[in-house]
Image (cartoon, rainbow, N blue to C red):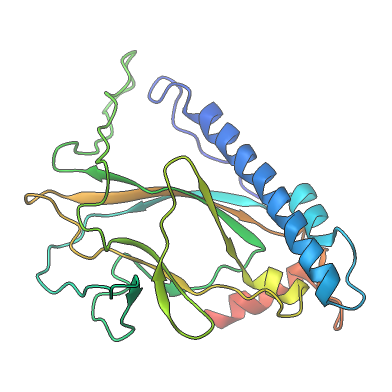
Length: 242
């Protein structure tokens, strides 16, 4: 596996350490979520191994983290509105304009609250050479210009709901491996990211967040009935996208 490529410390002082500390916090919290999932699975599934998911999340060496940047969208006048109960019409025309509907393939995905930046006011540039002066801090927007922008999930009944993660909280999504491990008692959640009318006074609004994908080790079993390992499951996932 290739090593991470970090920006030079002179360019972003403290970035690597802060990033690693935050990822470790998210993984530690995911362990607690996994423990709760284990308790549920133990009560529902005959022969379920106590503490299995917690061990997988705690000891895995394949967990990955990604800083996600959603580029500013071209403004549009066609923005569908959610209903009064927060649900969105599945026939809306601008649903997955920032990220198309998909499911995650790991166990639990830890998510931070999204940060919105007007790139017309703070144009992201890479300096031509490293200097002793770090870039000025970015000014975050207090919220998305369009309240309908953001992360949405689709329930088992097909209802589409907006997910709101407060700035001081984490969110967790269930993935396909968890669905396999718990024999369908937990389901992988289809989700997408909607830009909506993400602009402000002609600005260029980008969305930024961090996702940590907790995954089993390659030799861990994800389906005890067939003996399937996570490595075998990953090959199946890769075949889907050929």
